[in-house]
Length: 141
Image 1 (spheres, rainbow, N blue to C red):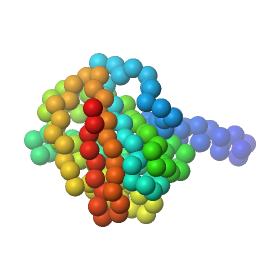
Image 2 (image 1 turned 180 degrees about the vertical axis):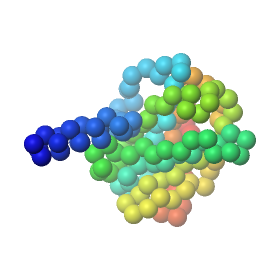
Image 3 (image 1 turned 90 degrees about the vertical axis):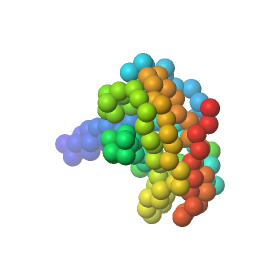
């Protein structure tokens, strides 16, 4: 019974997490009512993942984290993504996106804040680089 409960708990944790560690750039299509955050670890070190904060008119709208689904680490060059519904933000529009890195011991904000005109079906590709105290992120096409 305990074994079955442990298996069900593990499966539910995997299903709850919306992040996907990827071996390549291919994923399911992004629907018109969704957008995707996708990041590659270019820090040169293992990290747990990244966090994000969405702002509209200087008001925090949504916050979340994207980490390895097994509680492990993202190695250098690993790619991770999360697909989200636009309705969670309130629809398409102009937003500010702030990224932070979840390293081995804590969270550390990147210096940049990105202004984004978010639309349905949009893929936002991030490269996370730097090191503790000096992480940075950039959006690539």
